[in-house]
Amino acid sequence: MTASILARLTRRKSLADLQADHEGSGLKRALGPINLIFFGIGTIIGTGIFVLTGQAAAQFAGPGIMISFVITGVLCALVALCYAELASAIPISGSAYSYSYASGGEFLAWIMGLLLLLEYGIAASTVSVGWAGYLVSLLGDAGIHLPPQLIAGYGVPVTDAITGAPTGEIGVFNLPAVLALVAVTMLLIAGVSESATANNIIVVIKVSVVVAFIVIGAGFVNFALWQPLIPPQIPAPPPGADMSLWGQISRALGDVVTGHNDVQYGVGGVITGAAKIFFAYLGFEAVSTAGAESKNPKRDMPIGILGSLAICTVLYILTAGVLVGVVPYANLNNPAPIATAVNHMGLPWFAVLVKLGALCGLSSTMLVLLYGQTRIFYTMARDGLLPRVFGDVHAKYQTPWINTALVGMVAAGFAGFFGIGDLSNYTNVGTLAAFAIVCLTVIYFRVTSPGMERQFRTPLFPLTPILGAAMCMLLLMSIMADEKTRVFFAWYLGVGIPVYFIYGMWKSRLNARASSS
Figure 1 (cartoon, helix red, strand yellow):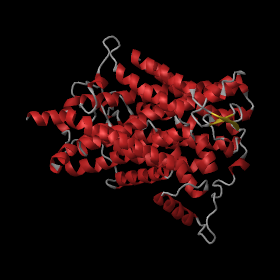
Figure 2: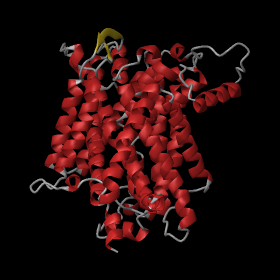
Figure 3: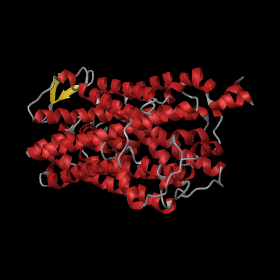
Figure 4: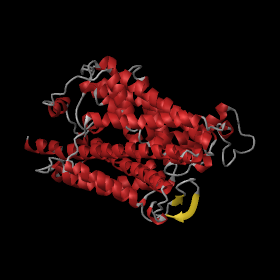
């Protein structure tokens, strides 16, 4: 009996099955390195940089948030190189979910599906809360003030739309965030066809806003606000503690491993800040999934991945530097930190442009995240792990409308009642765990399928995937030091895993195939 259950849990999709799922796509190899770099920049910029940078600086890293961006950029480069190899070898829909199905088996694929719901679905909730923050700030500039109870999640402190300082009010329901997701969900159900021209315009707007903020904001930077770069740890280390750089790093890593990384500032705060702003890099894996459409994947994929990551990391560091140089970092604990900074500059026209640009960029990000989540559920439904209703396509709109409506409702519910800090934690937990599995999957296929055709191979194997997985786990443990996040994740898996044993194990296509043979 035990052996039978274990066999069900570990049954894998063969590489032949995966390739068969992909046949007939007819994808044209038309993307060169410049196309991939711009594609990467467009997908990366527009989430965390507009939303979470201020909170990470205020709560954990201080001006050291600039160092946090370097740490996270290096991690993402390691993971992206692993994604590039898998995408060039198995260019199929489902991405990390499908890779897991082929390597670890059906149960691991189900776990990956749960993690991707956090990466995409809850990420959309996080972005919508940031979108609401910029909308509230823009309305405040026009003298329109929404009831404070309706602009933040349940029990979340409300901040002033102009200064970013706490108002003393407590939120009940984030109405603007919910309405934004409802609108995006309706668009997806109706069948939004992405226009290349429209996407290029949005990318130009997003990048222009960030560059303008850096260039104009540089003239308002007070370098005294950068001092000290890494503020003293709170609470202070015990008397006699080694205060050298290596001593602080060792103590910070020890705090992460033991689950006690609840301190503000210091080296530990910089590491925690790196975990918090990890959200800002979501979307870089989209570059690796373009392997089937790259003219020369072996050459172009690493250029596109590393080029876009390098450019975005530089933009992020400069943006963070201006942000903490214009506003004292303690005052940045709000959903719209860049809006707070431009308000401090005293340039009303610039504030309006930045907020409109942020709203535009975040709107497209919500659309892409919800779209990605519905397509993952669609793939899982085709595999039989989810009910067929998740794969039903509307006769008129030709979209998985029930799937989309359900995903939109869940995302809107989280956006309405949770704060942006909690939502970003939940997203980062799912994403970091998923990325660690992807890194290990590269090792699995190198060992079990050495002859598999790979148009791109991860350099410095096995060091790159091992370091990528290790750094993911380090940042994951840093986030899991938060008790609320641990409790949520335990409940999430506690509810999600039994669904597989009740439904997915018996209804999957592989089970049906095994039963009929």
